[in-house]
Length: 436
RNA sequence: UGCCUGGUAGCUCAAUUGGCAGAGCAGCUGGCUGUUAACCAGCGGGUUGCAGGUUCGAGUCCUGCCCAGGCAGCCA
Image (cartoon, rainbow, N blue to C red; front, side):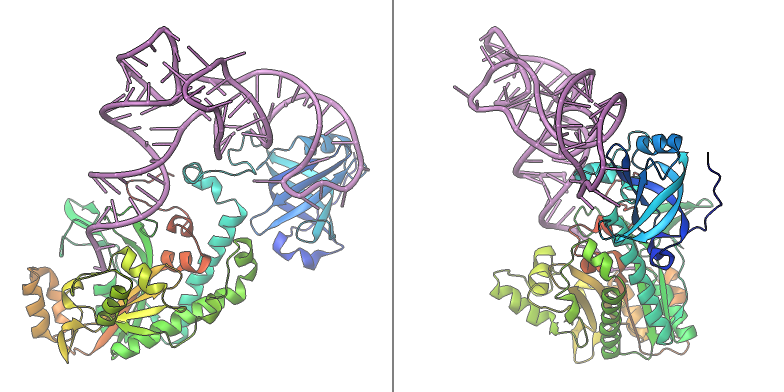
């Protein structure tokens, strides 16, 4: 048996820097093909997949025998010479001269053939090892980084909101209750109200974290646990808010197109429409949206909120994301500021992503008048006591301010062209389903 | 919660009018020195979701239940 020196560890994504060098790769067997005296083992190391080739001449006989018996997803540490080879998928190949088995996997459930959604979801912890899921998770990471880079560069400060929030302030049907030292608490649905406090402290802020919705929604665009980016800015009016949104979304999309070209190819995303995402975005008012829907045969009474078919009809009428503005106060939250020229509508806007993806952002200018906010609480039958701190914000140096919440998973689903939101997050929490 | 579709081998599916439950992949054994979801030969693998009913005979028809997927409702 030949004694070989230890080679430096390389990662598949950097192999081009190691052509002609002997390296060590640590990873998992993705697939293998044997042809008697020559053997091809595809190995993934988390950064990519590389084809390794072993022959009876290149590898000791006992290691060659072991290589032949390697099963899918067995963990290995291997070394060999890196070289370019057009016959290898990815263009690089490693000629094996050493191989160490870490653990032999047995009967890996996800085979290289097709599988149904239910089976894959049941094995989500293993499904994440596939190329497609790798591509989506890398794009998700880029979306999040782009959001933060953009806001940081615009002078926004990351100030996080609490996840555990005190007893019922609004209806409790859509909240997850938790026991908080014997007191009833709830998982946060949104950081928005706390953002208003930090925005009056720091000027321009955002929070980024999970939000929890206990709604009985079992659709392809709902999650019980989702991640939200929520900027809030003092002295921002309605118009400033929309401009920030279209600049943010455009930056995120263009960054993904630039940095995740390969991943978009792996998931076969047609990027024609994504390339058009740049400011300004088209805008229609709620009233105009009703007209548009009427033309398409979808009748809606003034004051009714859109259902999924309505959102789909509106967003497929535009090539870019579209703002629907000035929603009736009756179908929006109590804190949204009424339009001074027309108090029955609010200075609110939803941003609908194209290609049928629908709402990815909801936002508004907030009520800054103490009297009006107190009146809205009464109109909505909300108790004043839990809102004492929130009312304080209008008592001590109140200013016009605006903000919005962007759903990360819906944004990722749109950018990746996913059929269902469940692929946009590592471990989706769907209606009454929490495994794995 | 309602409607629609489905549940057959570890996975993806087939099984004509109610008439012997089958294929590919995965696994195992063997073969092959450039494979590309490799290929070739062979082997093992089944409570047809569960319970009941109709029938000489049920994977197939009927009833109930369970589970899954899709659509909708709901949805700061």
